[in-house]
Image (tube, helix red, strand yellow):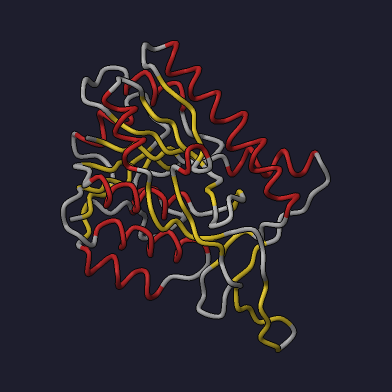
Length: 263
């Protein structure tokens, strides 16, 4: 079984991805982002996005109640239902969900993020957390009944509150829990790039050791993404492909060898 993670960038070709997926007979799960949509909506509402960088070098979006409301509107609302509609138009009986629904993704709220500001170390607390478990019974039930789960943030914390989380971490948790064969992450690039400014620098293959080395040397948002990829690949059972989500047959091309294959 496959999991397809659809990035939230402006150039992601949603229609082509879903049309391509409609040609596959095997069951699959979709996890999607909506970061550009979130940013546009927040701007229209006059809400400024705040990025926190922890003392260990990992960056994340600061999630207060306003930020979480925008996530509910953009990720769980508009983008989720756009993808469900595209699926239905292409004969895929999709069901849109968040990690909050049915406690599909049970998380643990962060105790706080240690950051450095004005030469001082302080703790920033917000409405974010990490996925700890997956309601595999619910996911399996939906898949066995012929539904395609279309999943996104927020997830649920210990007390039932909605919290923000990283979709990359959710993907890793689902893949490891369900022991998925293949995870394809569709992004706005030909694959993982050696040089972020050079599309021709796409890396064809990476070992887990090479991935860990890159994560240790990276900074900012990419550092967190590489850490999640390492967790996804660590059991050695799941084939992971980072591929271009802008083409006409993104999934077919990825399975045929395009993009970055991690093993």
